[in-house]
Image 1 (cartoon, rainbow, N blue to C red):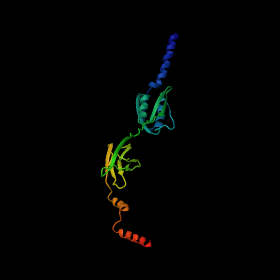
Image 2: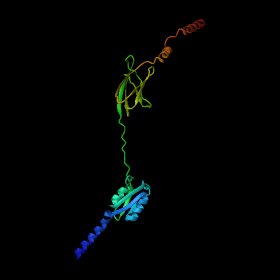
Image 3: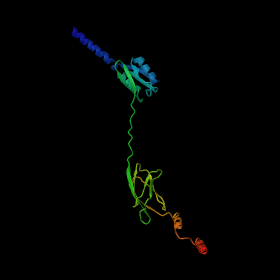
Image 4: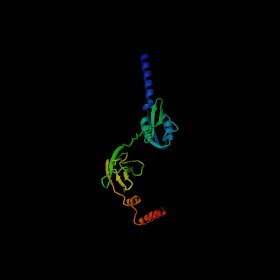
Length: 219
């Protein structure tokens, strides 16, 4: 008799523990804020819901229609599309919590090296020519052999090559790694430079002669 009673108590305890998780729920909620929908579920199912006041989407409008479905299926339908998850505990308690934000790993752009050489129209290296990424302060200068090297994070850039006395040039990178550039003399600038250090023009020669005569007379 004692063995029968023990078995009966064990069976009853197991049945009571499994009811909350396997109970079938029938409920119909149409276009209602989530917080109001949870109150209605509490009234119709006997489940208790616990959540924070800062729960995301707690005011989102939800709908659910269930006929003899378990509580998990009802919750899945109720929270579909919301940033909210749930956990069913014993004693018909359901805890709601915010989904953990997805961490998007930001990868650092891959740098690559581009290089080149700058010549003048005579095939001689241009020393100290500037090689700049257009629209930025990122750049370098050519060495004594006219060569240069630069690190880039983006292929969709344009390089500007310039030097005093030469016409500037622009070249698009577009996946290239090596550049050979020939700079031509700036015809508008060269005559001015020549006149600053060259011989006097015919118009200036009489003036120089007069100045020399004045100096000799004073002596």
